[in-house]
Amino acid sequence: METFANNKYPPVNTITDKERIGMVKEIFSTITGKYDFLNHLLSLRRDVAWRRFTAKKMRFFKTNWYLDVACGTGDLSIAAVLKHPKISVAGIDFVREMVQAGKNKIKNINMAERIMLMQGDALHIPFDDNTFDVTGIAFGIRNIPDREQALKEMMRVTVPGGQIMTL
Image (cartoon, rainbow, N blue to C red; front, side, top):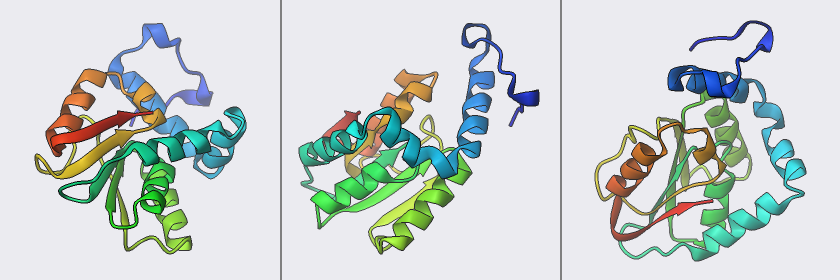
């Protein structure tokens, strides 16, 4: 991972995709402990309602699996299992510290049996084709330079007739 001395980041319009990805990883690895608080504060807690709304719209009909891409600390995964008691969830995020914070949160609320988080890349989703009824991504889509590739990967792992959801 490329690091940026003294947190002096170059202007976004002057960097390469690789530099942008490095910046995103570095920033998110340092704010993990404040991430949930910041999401709630900056959105005036609307993020909670948006996740509940998204979970309510999910439809499971074949695999009963949901994939949470760029899962962060797992809030959309948690919303999905609370709304759909028969599903299981896999979550991927490319920031190791976020995945660990999510695993801790999920363990603390006794959902580790239903939600599995792992480090992974939205551009190379580590699951077979047609694995999930629903594949979703919340706010992480804004940090992916190649959104088209990420959406193609999400489609690949979703069963025919399944849902791709972006929040």
